[in-house]
Image 1: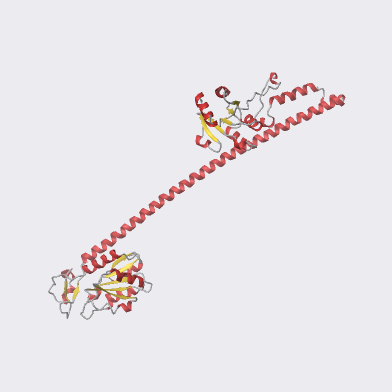
Image 2: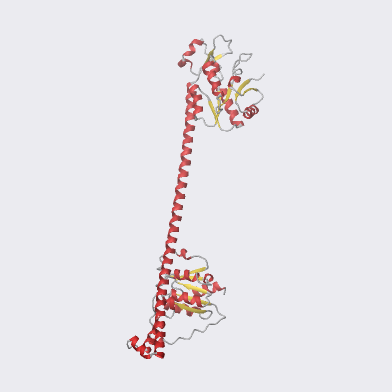
Length: 438
């Protein structure tokens, strides 16, 4: 016969079998799927012995375990049955169902999935804590009602033969159990608060990152709008200037036609203007704006000595063409001297001239200052990129100390370097040679 007996009440057959398998052979296990069926096991056997422990499912929907525990404490009429250690399997020892067990009497909660070692240790501790003391207090059963005198001791039950005893609960043990339960609850609260704080910090960091990305996107959009607005204004000015030049050409043609076929009408219509003066004015207009519609940023004042067209510079087709653009003409001339032995070097001082040159001529490398008078270097590059063949022109930026934006903003497709002014010969030559693989 087994030395110990345990009653398992659980409507989950798999869990009943698992509990039975983890208990050693010297423990007899009585399994029951309902509370009423279990009541026949929670009684004295042929030798008058009660179960050493009862294991209940605290989460069953029909509350079989709660029914059996209430019977043991309030309806059995036997204090020893009400004192049998009860272990309640639960998902949360602080749930409403768990509190219902506490309202009836003392129980031991086992939280979580069934673990062999942990559950067996809990059963062993419960049985050991319920064992009788070796020394029995020689008092009658009626005197056991004096809890203050018999705290933590055991006495003979009425009509018993010495083996049946009534247990007086140890209040110190109850207090310790409740303190342990309170400490576990407080630890859970601290853990949950820690997780909440970590989640809140993560959320705030994500919100900050999202706000920063929005600001950057808005800044980039604002810059694009500014560049588009500038280009639109430049286009309008160019169209107006071309319209003015076209009007002058039409007037000149009309003047020439009248001079040839109707001299008298020409004199009457123009009130004494002569063709020679009109021709001189037109030539001056053409010379003052050699780039046509692309000269929308303003006329270039040129004296009469420059009316004759200068011959185009000789270009060595075996050399690469490097275009350097900066408003500082002294610096660009110096940079041209550094590179002229190996490359065809073209120096320009405005964005409009650069666009016009790039449209008409091949460019192997463009070195441009992002800060230029009138159309900026960035707007110039954006305009070139929109021209046929302009998207593939490689470039380097020539940046001075007064550049207000972060230089990392200049990086992008086809940007192969950022050169800082003032440039030394070795730096410029090494950068250009390195790009062309020389």
